Image (cartoon, rainbow, N blue to C red; front, side, top):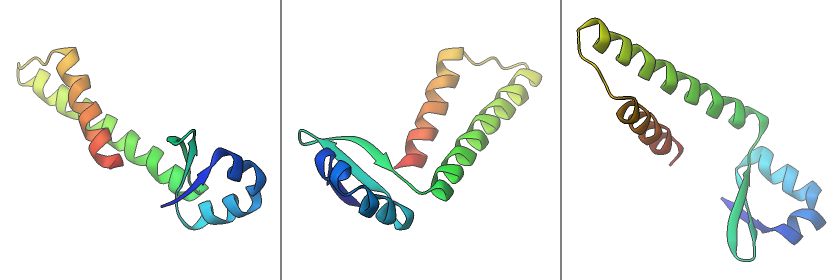
Length: 89
């Protein structure tokens, strides 16, 4: 993944766009990552993966409820967050 400083991103925006079409680009400000730019296609894929993870959790929760097993809301959201984080890594 290429990295641009915020100043470089501003000054070389065309290059930033061209690069982001090929690969994710990290943007740093004051030495720390603040954003990542991705292509429209990659963004759509990430959104789809998130939706699928949420729907999977809903289905698992419904199956557990149908079987008489209850899951605490906090545990459910923790599992979902872990899946989303793992998928993003």
